Length: 233
Image (cartoon, rainbow, N blue to C red; front, side, top):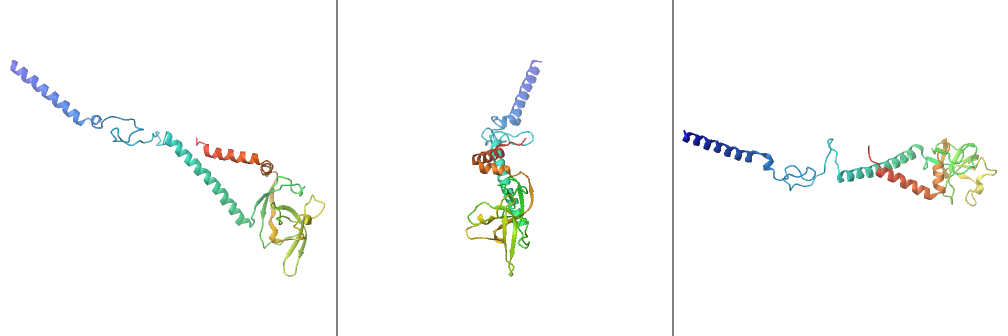
């Protein structure tokens, strides 16, 4: 009887020992080695894996990497806005035929037709003849800023060349005093564009920036900072 009990106890001990060995060889938690936080080690790294960023439930990157990624996207977005604006401007030049499709009235010489701050839309198709009474924007030698005045006289030669004289509606005399010395008439090459439409007082922001350069730089800085630092909701 005692012999049977001893044999049974020995058999139970052997089975318990075999179970512990099998558990040690099959438990994956023991095989992987020391555990490390998921944001520091890659899968299967065993504590020595490479550092990887944390990710949210939707797969988005979190932590310092997310900040760098957001800054990169904001810079790229700002560059796209600038390039898009340049493309639109170049497209307007091609469509309208004018080197300056949009200009701002800077003086009151054309009142009451146009007021200071009005935004003018121009076209400059060379096949269209210049007629007395229409409003043109022209440049003269020695002046950087174009002038918008009305054509009051047109002188057409037999060979087809056209010369014309301009005057501001609110001025008492014609523009010969504004032309370069010795010039009495304008030619088509002097024309920047012809007024086809306008928006009243929309260009006052441009006038304010020209009158107060510090305001212009501050506004540009604020706009640039807003585009670069704005976070997507």
